[in-house]
Length: 544
Image 1 (tube, rainbow, N blue to C red):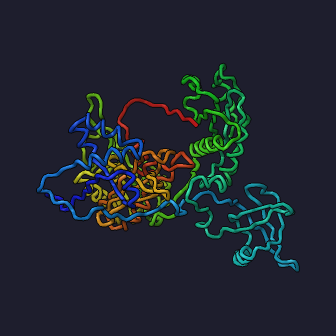
Image 2 (cartoon, rainbow, N blue to C red):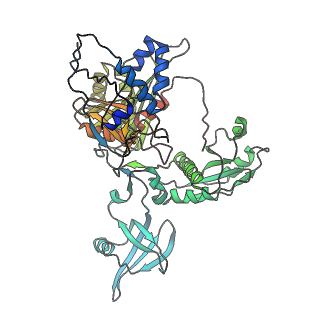
Image 3 (cartoon, rainbow, N blue to C red):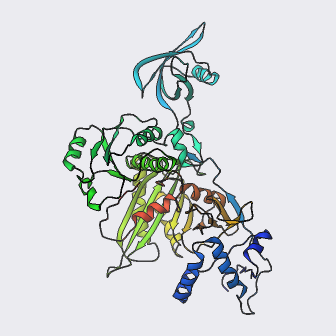
């Protein structure tokens, strides 16, 4: 056999309850592609019994393994179980959200018998109002002693009950300390989003007399630190009347800032109801808006979609194990599957070391090949290099490439040659992000019940740089079978644990959701979203 790795199988004839009682760890899987080609009927039977309910899947697999026979010339490993390393990533505070800070100008400081008297203005709130305070915070006083005034700086300003004036309680002299760290996107509610939206309006269009006060409250909470951001008076309409495009355009024409339209409908509306908003930036919320926990969660997601669509950024990654000279590139190769035309599209996306999207490009209708063609890679990567120049960003010293799916045998050579051509000698890591062929995977809880592993659990073979990574649970029921992704580090010298950490935290950004991560990292997800080969023009419907 060309592959020298041992085949490790464990024939089980014991029940699920026995497995759980004996503290056994187990992993079971099968080759989907081979089975689908070998027998569609058998494949249908297997997927029917292993793709939804976890306990049902284990009960189905065990008798199959009990009757599984191999020819005598196969030598099975004496090891009963395959040992893996386990990383638990979700508890790390590695997301950057808002800062609870604002721009202030420290005008003057004077030593008095009562202490240091500081005069400052709140530039975002009341730039013409001079405020005088006597700071008591020792850290703030120490920082003031090191600053030359006047100076504009980021600060946290608070005014609690009983305080005559708003006080500066923290000065952010280090820009890297401005943002709050968390392990969940929903921390934006308390701290604001990473990059708030300024110089924009929101125009609410409200059907059926819905109350949108909770929406307005949430906009203020999530968009902390913004300037010149206004929620315009609502346009109230009856569902039977439809949306008056001329009325909307007249409102937009009178605004100095750009405007996002937020449409609120209690019930599902006919598709042509929104036709009058075509080519206008808008987001649609469908459902109840009364004040309860479920609606607040749904409205929070809707608010963040509106803010992201207006240029806001919900969260960034604190630590990707690289610096400002390190970048992440997602690539995907899409192929035509219908019709007589035979071609491929090649998509590339580039992110900075905090996971912020810099730009993306697509090479359309190139000759259809399973492997990457070097000259197409060079064309695409030169465009990525152009994005760095346009944004005054330094050239890369390190690159991590995430490939959507498996690499062809020649792809690593094509990619490394491309990088050498475009940027010269750069440290490169190439990683496969594989969506299919994942195993049925389970763990025990404290009660001994089989449950799905939590998001952020990585089960990995460090020697062969292979990981099964749980990125999102995709179901509220703990009995549901989940869909992890498979990570293979195919090229490069970065520590494998760091590679897995990078992939996981890229699933926490650009999610369109405050409470769940995406299954795929933003690198390959963005590339996959733009690589489509269909020539039809699709209009997205954005539901809350």
